[in-house]
Amino acid sequence: MNDVLEEYGFEIVRRQDFSDVTYLLEIRHPLMAKAARAGQFVIVMLHEEGERIPLTLADFDRARGTVTLVVQAVGKTTREMQQTCRAGARLHALVGPLGTPTHIGTVKKVACVGGGLGVAPIFPQLRAFKEKGAYVIGILGFRNRALIFWEEKFRAFCDEVILCTDDGSAGMKGFVSDGIRSALAAHPDIDEVVAIGPPIMMKACAEVTRPSGIKTTVSLNPIMVDGTGMCGGCRVKLGGAVKFACVDGPDFDGHLVDFDDLMRRLKRYSEEEKRALEHWSENCRMTSLGGRA
Ligand SMILES: Cc1cc2nc3c(=O)[nH]c(=O)nc-3n(C[C@H](O)[C@H](O)[C@H](O)COP(=O)(O)OP(=O)(O)OC[C@H]3O[C@@H](n4cnc5c(N)ncnc54)[C@H](O)[C@@H]3O)c2cc1C
Ligand code: FES
Image (tube, rainbow, N blue to C red; front, top):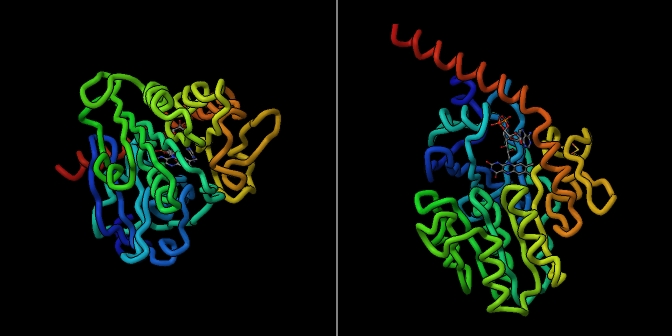
């Protein structure tokens, strides 16, 4: 596999670790950097036999010819990437940009909300709103101070930042939904809220804005396979209609999304995912024992 990583593919030019589980990869791909728009994602294969996993474009730099991914190590592939993706290594495949870009429109005041890992994918949208002249309120939420990343990057593009931590170790104590309440109290004229994070968080954000009917956009992360509308794996329910997140989204109207169905579907393969991780961890253990012998 190392030979594959060294011979061809897409070069990782920078890696940064934000915590024990979250890491950033900046990858050279000038064409994709040129084509990328806020809200789009890519499908990555670590090596020839690797699983295809969707990851959101957390940044793109047309001058440097690079795209940036921020990854949370949650299972077999994202942990394997955490182990092998160093600067100078190569990804076997990087397909995209996929998905419908976020509709930035001409809103005057927008709140961009990122919860945990969701802070990374909301960044290109927040920057695009700022570039279109909107007043941008960034609402960032983390479990605690140690997990905070990109606060300064956000401050550079936001008119205001509301930092929330679950335990109150930095910023205001509370969830991002509390941050939205606080922003709405100070700015009743917010035109749109965009929220990205775990489904339960996006559901809570949509409930905060539902009574006032403020447009609320969320980015959905159902299980995807091909990412091009062919397999039907990424089916989501919206107000009685069925949509495919990879081509119709991933952005959708948060007030219409059936989040309970999304959460149920995300758990569908948990037994298989657990077995794949155990199998991979056992192989890693055997390889490292073999290496020492
Ligand atoms: C449009 C989109 C954008 C995403 N952006 C990011 C991102 O920027 N950073 C990031 O860390 N993660 C992102 N994800 C989630 C990421 O794809 C999964 O965490 C990853 O596929 C897990 O693979 P695994 O083998 O490590 O873990 P597994 O053990 O296979 O799965 C862990 C959990 O991840 C989810 N998952 C598994 N396979 C897939 C799949 N093929 N597609 C979607 N979800 C899956 C399931 O909920 C599962 O319970 C995104 C998902 C989607 C659909
Ligand atoms: S991932 Fe196959 S249809 Fe969307």
